Length: 155
Length: 252
Image (cartoon, rainbow over all chains, first blue to last red; front, side, top):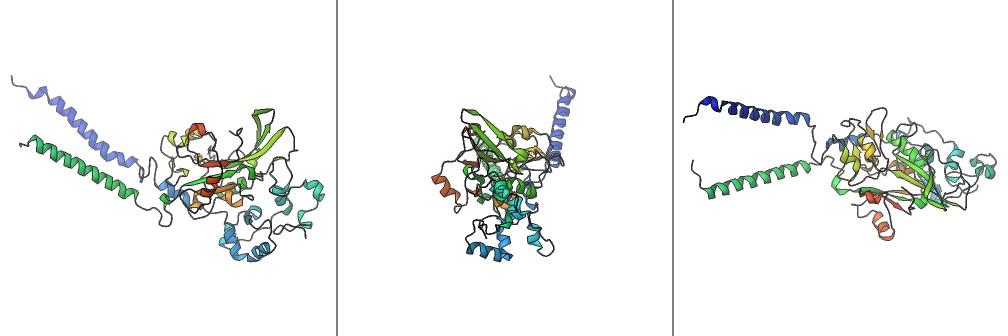
């Protein structure tokens, strides 16, 4: 028995639709995937680079030492217990000053709060740093009356 | 067209193999493209060592981190923070933990007591190898980079907060300015330039040490040979690379 065309025409239409859909999928899908997605994993590879442009705030002690060798020399000479400390721990973030020394002038830190940050006596503080009960120790006097921050022994 | 079965199998096998090889080569070519000539990601594997016995709770790390990474200054947003543990000798299961303003302004002075042990625990992102936070992200906006740093793609994050819930260490928050997830980047912008992180830079006692396990010259190797270290919540098998030395078992 000969089959009529109308018996299977609907299958061709269906198959055609499927093929069309597949082709559309293949062409449209990349438009929704950001560049670099999947290069290293399920994320945009460019995202790794994005964060690298974040500006520096802390220059690091090595940068400070390039100009402020007088402090370094003094600390080495007196074997100061502060000679390995980060300058910016007390002086604050100064990458801007390191980049443009004359344009950005740092402000001297308030000395007593800076000292108290590490040297106030409190339970749980390991005895790595000398600790005093500041109120009894100084009676309200600024730490700098007796101590020099860069070489913190007595005068 | 009359193709013998043997020839058909040989031919199709050949084509299958060739397409496979071509696809692999293409993948390798893409992966091999250096993104930065001076910094090769495959040469690094970053983590951090924290010696609890050296932390004096000064909070300089918290302040430095906020400055360096532009973390919202109002309370409760921290990339790193310091907790003070007071473990009661009679009840070790319930340590008293405080962290006023994340420890950024130090801690209120505390009298020594014979009944408790007090110590400070700095915390930050653990930069897990198999981190739960990256696995739950529905859009692939957070990931562990090939050099072992867990980062957030700010342009792609939809702010659904799923990762914030997933992090077992509480290290993520939603930035109220951008409405995207934020976290410690291990100062990625610094370490790729050869600098240490801001928190490690200012730490006065060396309680925090950035390390690179793929750098044979890193002192971490000698340290790990001679000292036991722990990670937080090891039972979760997150592959944390935040190693703690002298950690008390009460720390969660």
